[in-house]
Image 1 (tube, one colour):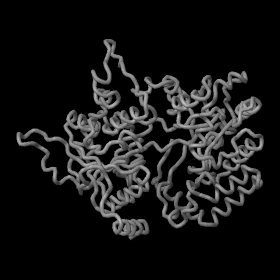
Image 2 (cartoon, one colour; image 1 turned 30 degrees about the vertical axis):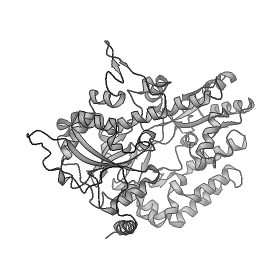
Image 3 (cartoon, helix red, strand yellow; image 1 turned 120 degrees about the vertical axis):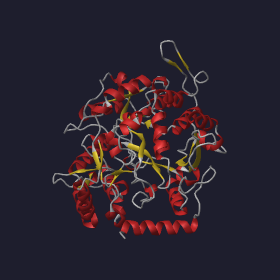
Length: 523
């Protein structure tokens, strides 16, 4: 038994001692759907597709305010409309990994399990590797003929992201058709006031930030704790603190030790020295960062492009004439620009090895990809929530409250399939929707830094402190460079220390996985 399986077994035994059962809002999870019988009624007609489903509440207000989500009006309407009978078990988003562990420990695995990312997510507890879920390959033979809408909707390369040892286990139901998701935001009103054009490269960006400073703006650029949302300045050098790429020796290494990272830190130090970047960027919490932006104290930052309407709405409550626009990210010395590219899979669903109705479920997903189903999931009930005009256009009003938005999101959850790059149906009805679609179609595809995800590494179980996502050694060194407490050449000493503390083994394992083709490409 390998180390990974031994750790998994120990984890499940430990959790089982304190857990026992999964937490949820449904009628109880089952070990597969063998109780479903033939799924026909007494008249020989096809009975509803009955299945249990576990999923995160996603911090969705509409879901969380429900006393029993299985009695929800939209769930009942969905069941009747598509001949299904789903029993949802909700997991707390804030404790998602822990509750997934409890679920696996209990042995009471729902028919369908929805988890973030692909099977390497911590919440999956190596369940795919340990045979808890079934491979989908036998069902995907001639899939273009059996499930044509589903296969046309989800691109092949996104399916490939869910492969384990050459076989597909999870269906990538929430995915990104465009993985360059983060955009550069800039205050257009301040840019116009300064009489400057939209900056295209780092030099022009520095000139704009200096102009913002001269205008009295408190924070020309602002980032968030541990380099969050400072991606565009790392991306201008082709790196990011959380991602991996090939070095000059064709080894798969974390970006935090690549030479380009040293150049990025040199640039960031200059921004701080010149007073062009919020000095609290490495410690500012999410709420404090947002408050600075909403109060009009920030001229430039980066964030998911889809939030443009929300940022402008919040800004105008304090600065009525203020306006953020999405622009091309600054190009660096080697032609790189933009934030890191996301993994193409955001959420996947897995089928319990005892679930006997995978083919029928896939046919349900195929139906969810039709225009008729997508109109229902997006807009609601025709005649009540929306109408179709004679010219074929849709008359619809987007919800004006968070609860209303989350109600729409819940309805979309029921249909599973969603391209989360942007919603082609709902985006046109959002304030600033046309601008967002323009960025997504014309700017986003032209930028973003590719990266390679090595997946789970045994060596990082031994040396978790070397994981780039949580490497305090890097954050301490980079902070000292940023604040001028240490010279930039301190970076070279950090690289040596990283390798000597076990990094060489981490790089060796990651490179072996790359050479064997067992990695995940974000591009």
